[in-house]
Image 1 (tube, rainbow, N blue to C red):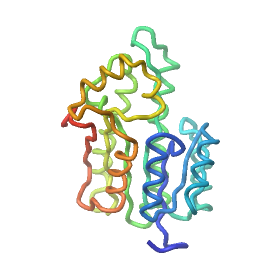
Image 2 (image 1 turned 45 degrees about the horizontal axis):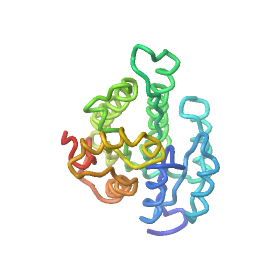
Image 3 (image 1 turned 180 degrees about the horizontal axis):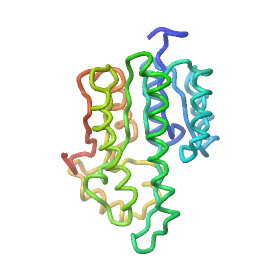
Length: 245
């Protein structure tokens, strides 16, 4: 892919760690100039930026609409275009329904609100004007299977898959493709911290007998971002066989 103003730009929310960081690396390898969004993981985001030539950092709080308005203005200056938006950022609180409070619920739900608002801004300011783009929402297998102690999280992830399908219908006739990727259990810092007993319970649910690597999710993101030209409004399940959709 060409350099300068013709180089395509991909923005990855929550891009400094885990699946987001893997997506940034994979998209950079595909020739994208990558915008690494972060809220609090500044040190890790800066370290990743140093790895990826031409990449840039975008700090914003998805729970704050004014922060997102400022992010879009910054993107117009820093990039001038957005060809791919990967909505990867998420937040979770593990607690049974009867012990979770409203503030905890809102902290999870407000990230989904921010994802909706950021996508709206990116569509309006960039993709609709150009007439093309790719929007990729990272959801979760638990949005389809449910998971005890994660009710708000499962609600949000299921809602993002519905968001994908509804937005697809609103974009009829345009070359702006919207899809979800619903990973199963992925090896990240969060899963590494789980007790061995819980990890074994997870593995027992996966026919492949192992958790995914973040790179395996990023490979699917890269496919949708660069190829997959007739995949639209779909939820791609990447979970080692534990759920088929």
